[in-house]
Image 1 (cartoon, rainbow, N blue to C red):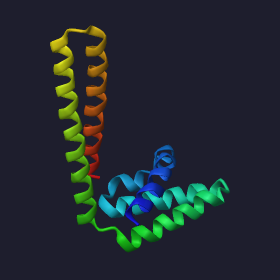
Image 2 (image 1 turned 180 degrees about the horizontal axis):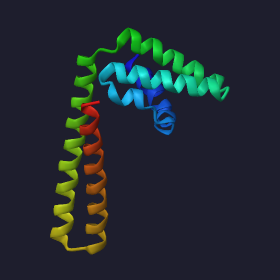
Image 3 (image 1 turned 90 degrees about the vertical axis):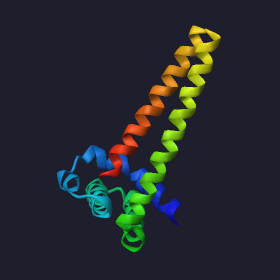
Length: 129
């Protein structure tokens, strides 16, 4: 059930970002997620997107039923831990590439490390939302 909810919210997220609703920015945790889904639902209705509207109604019901601020915080903390492990692995890969001295491989590993660090930073910022 969590995976379905997460999938539905992931599908709806770009619509939310495009909408840029200020009201959800002042909220945190489940309240912010609910406000985002509500804003996306309004956008879907305004554009006559019935399929998106149906998905968002399901997401809304799941949030009402299952979302708790504590549970959301645990999920986000677990995501941060996973992203930190990825950063650590990318650092180790970069060190190996540097030891071999191949500039092309070093550049690839540096890019992968930067991407992993960006993902970690985004996850950390999300923790307080």
